[in-house]
Length: 300
Image (cartoon, rainbow, N blue to C red):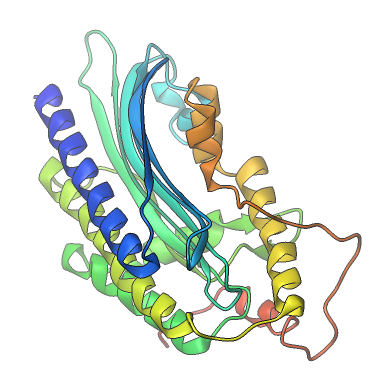
């Protein structure tokens, strides 16, 4: 049963990777480089677009991995599963546009099975998406959250507020005391209902990412910018790097599982900057970003 389910997941996830690839290629006009890999704990395919017309760097990874013991990053919230063998599959993507008025965006969907002799296998889904603007537009953020709400609405009225709160909590930099962006959806350990119900949910989330992000890119593509906006973008990208390398459980899981380093770290931007004790000028467009980095009900 679990083998059949896992095969069903990998088939669906590779189809979702294709779907997202097609959507981003249509926006940029460039093709992703396909980089299949196999070895170590599993197999997968990294898809990378660099120096595109719109996207300075974008990556869409599929991976299927397994091992004799769940890595610590996966058992932090489920300590009772420590020591179990596991299989996992997922699609993870990040988009770093060149234009500072187009937000950075991230999404992923994942499936885990943990097994041990003499006990029933434990399975769960996870996923979500979040948006990281540099020069935010209120209408874009509202559209993003409306799309997030609509994506999960068929699966229960309580899911959007629950997953939004989890996203606000997860994508937070404690050492900076600020959110990484304006949030979206985040969920883990989801096994409510049937396997088919969970697979349909993560599929809807992946589709929701496309419906949420594509219109924002189309609206902001031709917004003019200069060196000031570019430098602020690079500075804020530094926060993205800090989160992914210090706090992100997906990065830790990949490294702890012996995964392919190039694929794990593809989420990092091609360029970023750090300035010592820098703060934007009061009442500037750059200072305005802080107003958006405080979680709130965007649909109120």
